Image (cartoon, rainbow, N blue to C red):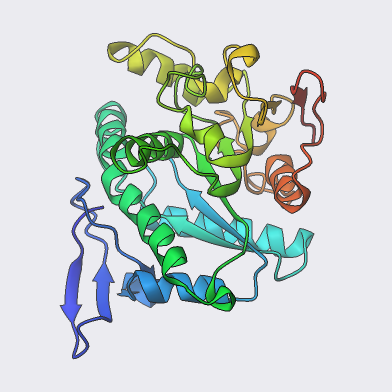
Length: 318
């Protein structure tokens, strides 16, 4: 994360936190904050942050990892919109959606900020792996079962946020969890994933995504214009189609808990003309995304609807 500008108060724990939008180089630190007015937030530290999530009324927790060229306020707006949809479609206390902010560059020209964001997504892995370790250690430190958090935790990653997630889990396992990745999450929901479509296969850097979750749902759309461009931009790295463009390259090579619904019937209606951001309300309308509605149902009962149980592939419609 970029280093924040802080106004230190009398307390050494509670500090004001402001995003520095001129700096998008990740640091090794992660900051647990409460959103405030006028873009001035409050750092409340990890213990307080996780205790509030545990003690809150929501039955589920969903962390949202935003994508390429998304400023903090853009991520906050996305979460507010998704939270409103969840509250409308489910009971008010079904889920609490929490934004995970990494330093995407919303100001540079499109090509240069793509490369900048790609590097920032990779480099954010150190900070976010530490955040997951904070959670694991916090759980183990709760000696009384009544103090532990048993709420199901899921992740929704959009676009380049898939790279942030992939690299975080790979780094965490490689550096700290030598016995393997535990089952940390109820669901991992990959929306328009801007990573290669072989990522989830064994032997690739995304292999720990299926390890860490009961269900992995990888939403894709063949006419996602942003990911067509991403394939070309990434020619310096590897020549491959993107996960959010085709789904997994070979279903026989991914774990049995991976499901790739095709969203090509509605993505451009929700996000014309690019068809890339189709996980919220339709642009200019009020209809909630079939992707988000599907994801909420998977979180609720782990049943992946609209797919063939034998092949694990299927198609979502509006």
